[in-house]
Image (cartoon, rainbow, N blue to C red; front, side, top):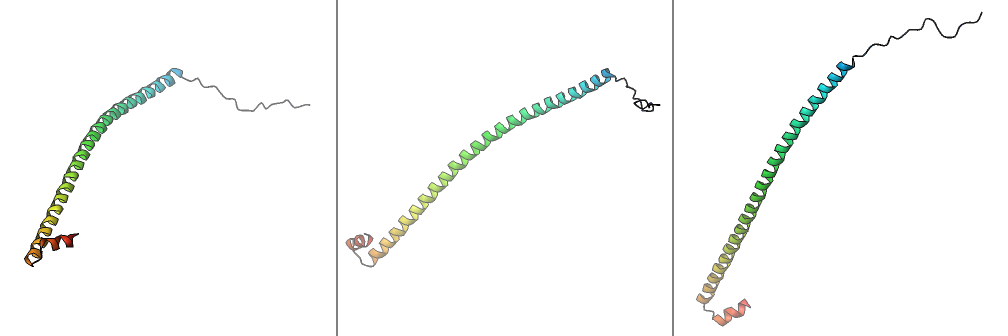
Length: 111
């Protein structure tokens, strides 16, 4: 006698009924939670952008003030160096005049 095809002992799967309303409600709640987090992060980002803009403006102003101060310092140092050279030249001139050199001899030495 021929054997029938297919097993009569195979496990039968019972299709479970899925509660789609519960799945939709769960996914909707998850979506709303994520949307609220995105909104919060966007608000924080906007706040941080305004803070960054303010800090950049402060940095620019501080940089300008620093540059001005450095220029004034360099000018003051240059003026002090010039005064020192002038004073040193006057001292050398006085010493040379005191030693008996004439003005023409001093000019010849300078050139």
